[in-house]
Length: 305
Image 1 (cartoon, rainbow, N blue to C red):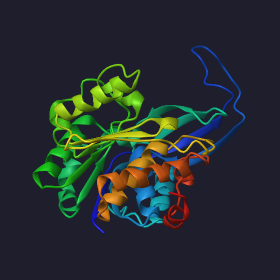
Image 2: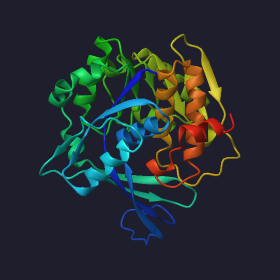
Image 3: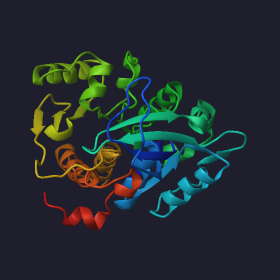
């Protein structure tokens, strides 16, 4: 199996079950609360490791109990955490997540150590990037660091997967030009480009991403499945399994990205990778939490196709 390197964030998630997402100025009582290891980069690394992928991670945490727990959790599923840096005087990143009964969520992120992942750190660990085949990045670390990492990956002929979350408008075209697979959800796609209100907008936006340089576009559509636009301009619409009972959508997108990476690492086609990724996220949304919801390779093999 090809080697995967995830460059991204590590957060401790403070997850509260709430009746509804509060509006401005509103105070509500949470029904339950738990601490769950998270962060988009860590979630993706953990999921890849749990699905028996050959994966290492680059990122930063504070010298605190949250950072220790995050690293130990990744190690427990075989993720190489030897290059994760522990910073003094800086706290580990946290995310405060409100989850409503229908499973949807609202997330507030405090970057902490993640904001310190800079170009010099990537330079120091260039040997790890060079030894990897697939590079996975998100946008919870500084954009300039992501830009530098993907440019270096492109120079070296690596496969680059970008999860453009949290989405920001007006990302530079030079970023897209370094990307082999970009995976926004429909909300992120609208933020990246323009309003995405129907199927026609969806297809137009995906084609615009291709014009900006991204080779393959995978748009996840929640309960409506996903849409794939490939480098050769062929399209594919995958419909969701309506029998899935959604409990919590936290980490559904991260696990989907992990499924893509694992499938591509083992030599699957992009069509096969998208199908596997959908099966992974179908399991994740039936469970609470981020990394705690991610299925093992064995569970995935037993899941219906």
